Image 1 (tube, rainbow, N blue to C red):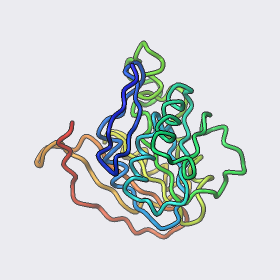
Image 2 (spheres, rainbow, N blue to C red):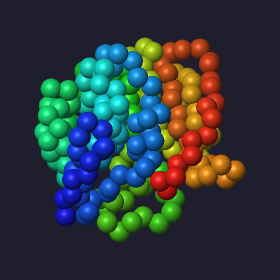
Image 3 (cartoon, helix red, strand yellow):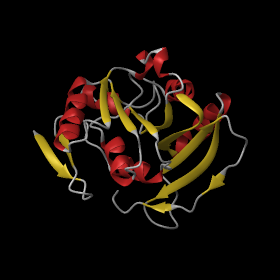
Image 4 (spheres, rainbow, N blue to C red):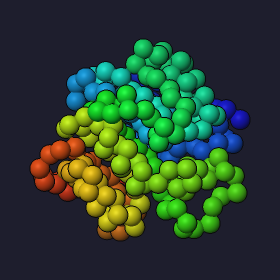
Length: 224
């Protein structure tokens, strides 16, 4: 069943479907973590129902444009409904294709890429029997390595990639970003309460800059 949820910002709404993957608080945390610059050209990779891109824009209306890129047609359709409902058609473009199929025309286009990726590494863990759900949780159609490599191509010099990921994948992600010229500049760990081990981290990598890493104070997510 399709439901409409209020983002509690400027009366903006987002469509979700009970039978498809529904976003979690991690998506909202990522949109709040991402840095903003006036005139940003933004892409939301693996955008699902569009929550990260739409919530980011709700917080940062100085962005020039936002592309929501999602492989599943059903989720892309929900994104389009949300964009239309909110009257954002002049800012948002919904692209229903794998990020691996973005053409060379997109190279160097973006100043910011947001991505709440599948958390489970390919070949690890039991995969959900519903493939539409599994594609959002497991690396079935795209891997973390592909996301980082493609982002490095699609970002302009000085462009930022902001992602969230489970802490067990911290080393792999930070090393991969550095290997393709996306210098990790900000990292923030997320906990359910102070004193507990983090379950998630947020990371920003910037294309073509010198090392300048900052570790931010822990973020307490009480919505888990």
